[in-house]
Amino acid sequence: MFDVTKSITSIQALLAANLKRIAELQPDGAFGQIIKQATIDIHRKASANTHIGRYVQSKSGRYRSARPGEAGIGGGALRASHRISVEGLQGTVFIDDSTTNPLTGQRPSIYGIYEEGRGGEHSFYRRTVLQDGAEIVRRAGEGLASIVVRVE
Image 1: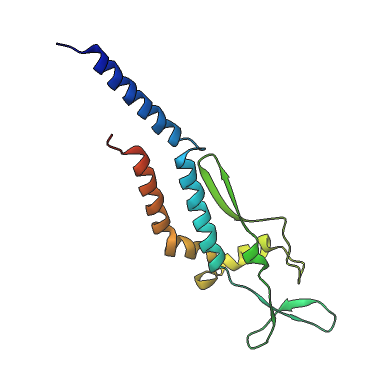
Image 2 (image 1 turned 30 degrees about the vertical axis):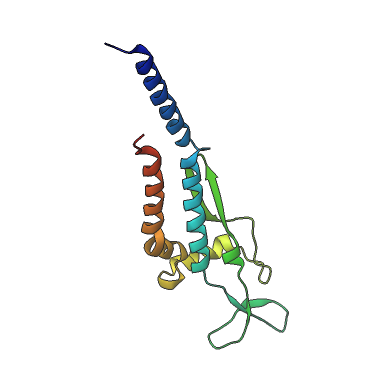
């Protein structure tokens, strides 16, 4: 015999679970949080990979980059200029174009391009992708899989 009550109840439960999963995949749901966390992780690693400049003050009072062996004061404007933007399901890490180095008056968004382009240990974004990118993507993928693939 066919039990209509159990069938309707089962379908309703499946529909409710499906609606919950769809909500979790929206930008304001669990998937959006996964994207936000991955972007935060990339920002943190890129900031840590960014060198802090050393500066010396000339007799005129202007600052310039310290040469090897010169004791200078620390900068950090480039490191402090990394920003995060998360819109929908897209996260971006970038250098804020509105910041300036308080010692030199230069814009980190300009000299950061040259620093990145130097390559090797100076390449903060490339190093982040090569050293940490796979792990960050793996964790995000596990989070997404936990939303999409469930046995209920």
